[in-house]
Image (cartoon, rainbow, N blue to C red):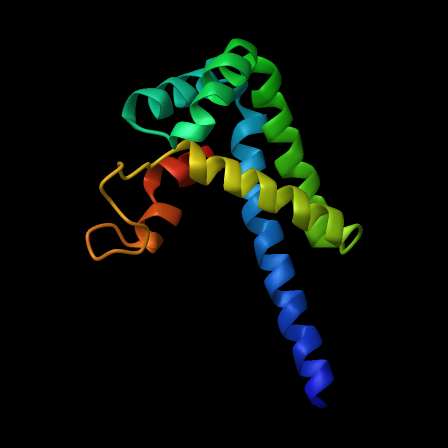
Length: 139
């Protein structure tokens, strides 16, 4: 097998794995109406109370929270479309961009370590911010 074939297989495996993760997250949100009809608002309130990055607080408080049902449905359907795109290999670049934006919004909406912490410092490793339970629970 040539190196090009090996790289293609590795990227396909990675793409399908990420697609399955997004499918699991979307399935959780779409099979139960709890996330769309109240769960999203509960998560946003929790993020506002427990610490979100200061620059994203106005977006969460003034735009997303009053329209939590709409944004809950939008997040759920977006995750499903990203998953289908990754699993089928269709429109990968657009789905990757949408997934990146979604993940960055989730990251900055939660786990603000505070003004005294520096990202990547020994007290707050970046990996604990990226893979924290509150970020993963919204995925």
